[in-house]
Length: 166
Image (cartoon, rainbow, N blue to C red):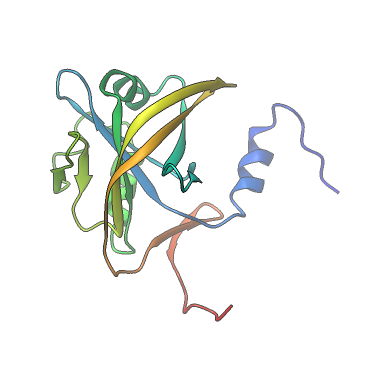
């Protein structure tokens, strides 16, 4: 049996990577209307009543700073043909929105065109834990398309195989 050392990030990433997840891009605009965004898989539906989601961002993230300023953000679940968008928002590029088509939600969050689904959230609370901040937010706007999702598993982007009946 492998044992996880407290600071062994390689083991943690390898373990966490075994759980297939959808790919999300979190987007927002700061108080100066500069757009920010990043790719992440740490997105969780928290509550149905009220409709809450949580996201976890590194404490040094510019996107986290912008979310704290604006009080809102978009969750964009990418479709299987948007691997290039995933890579753009996973980068440290200054202008991630320059080549990515988007519109704005009612609260002002940029929402990525062609996404499987996107929603806009209003921040309810933040909780600092370790090197990340947990942001709890109320989902206030959604749009869903009937397309295949982009999936992340074991360090690779992929699409779902044919669904297996439950």
